[in-house]
Amino acid sequence: MFTLLFIAFLLTDVLLRFWLASRQLRHVIRHRDKVPPEFSERIGLYSHQRAADYTVAKIRFSMLEHITEAAVLIGFTLLGGLQFIDLHLGKLIANEMWRQLALIAAVLAIMGVIGLPFSVWRKFKLEARFGFNRVTPRLFIVDSLKTLLLVLLFGTPLAAGVLWIMGNTGTSWVIWAWATWVVFNVLILWLFPTLIAPMFNKFTPLDNPEMTQRIHSLAQRCGFSLDSLMVMDGSRRSAHGNAYFTGFGKSRRIVFFDTLLARLNADEIEAVLAHELAHFKHKHILKRMAINFVLALVFFMLLGWLSNQVWFYVELGVLPQLGRPNDALALVLFFMVIPVFTFWVSPLFSWLSRRDEYQADRYAATQSSAPALVSALIKLYDDNAATLTPDPLHSAFYDSHPPAILRIQRLINND
Image (cartoon, rainbow, N blue to C red; front, side, top):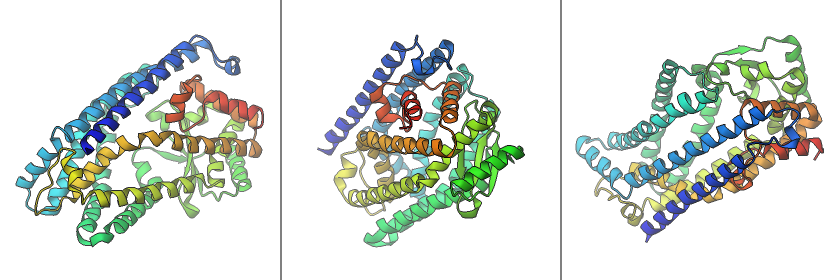
């Protein structure tokens, strides 16, 4: 029964994604040859068509990725791939902890190898075709090795800790494993600005006294205690621009991509930053973290129940090994299949995110300048080749930010 349910949800997932993708393709292509009136004075037809072509290329590429991901999932589950790996590792490795860690590592390695061609194509073909990629093959390899190192340094202790908890703390393992996951995520957030991010990018203090003073004044008005203003060499990897704030307590910092500073004027930079600070002011990040932690607890509780159900393994193509722990098998199987059953709630989380973005826009308009924010957004949409005419339903499922036209209209109308 569960096998049929899994297949039904997987088919629904794939078909729904393809239907949404086809809607997006038709909608963007239909509006390709005319710039929306709200943007006609600032964005030319060539830029609008470039954004449409970029969106179409990404959608078509994502459709191929979805098909591959579904095939890989079927291969690991119903076709016996996970069963094959688990049995052979059981013959090769006697130590139970190392055997289970090897299972997790093997699955991640296989998925990484399968995903590598897609990453290469996205960087060196799709992004390069539209002038965004600046990553060299050497830098791509170095970044990949650094990422692998981080996974080994942080992921291995986390996996080992959760497996130990599952095997040694009885029925209360769910709470302990969840608490470990929460602590791990907080630790990563704390280490990111000072340890992880500098491994990939160079950060230098903002060298513009007038802009620095202006930003400090804005931060003070917003009640944001600021430790430093940093510029990141984002242009080393991409032509896309952005800004964000990170850190905890007195170590909070604002980070600008150099590509953003090169494109926006002082008023626009202040408006973009006011938008980012609004997320802090309204505690959007803390709220999202709280939601994620609560959902993680729900998932751990569900995993705790499913891991004791033989049908959960058998009907997904896996036979648990008798007399040996199957905790890693349960973890891998659960986190493989759970996205199939949860995609349908995507619109809810997209709506929550877009609601926060509207609230941040309103706050930025009061703390800086609505026209400056409108101008900055238009420049960013143009520079990043973001489509101005997304399909509404596709946007409702996937987009964490509201469509460009709706954001601009609300800012202009002070809504």
